[in-house]
Length: 173
Image (cartoon, rainbow, N blue to C red; front, side, top):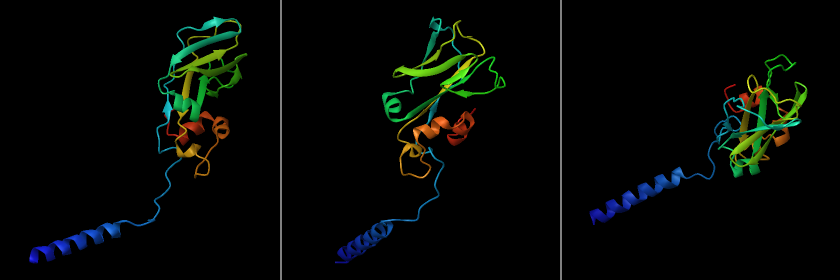
């Protein structure tokens, strides 16, 4: 009889703890910085070893395993260039697409896992001094979900400067 009574008391105590620990809504913690709930991928700066194509249609491809179908289709991919001889001031990072050094510069994802940078210069662009980088923002992060605190549309992200993007997602410049 004592064993049954102890079991009943133990069961009641455990049940009370479980029920007390389950609240419908508890206090809300502080809001973290936008985009901190998922990984934002970014490449190192790289320079092309050679440009392919011809006059007015130059390109080089780089391996980018972080550019999966999910990120490309549902997220945002931003690309940047640092161009030797840029009249801005020679140290500026430009978001792509851009017009600089007498040519249009852009990028495209021609297949998942790869990124292609392009230029419409007449002569082949430099392989040294020109540097390129991409940032891949998955569509699952808070900053891309409409109606959430810190929401930014794809266009807002594209309009942000390189430094603003780096600050927003804690990316080393």
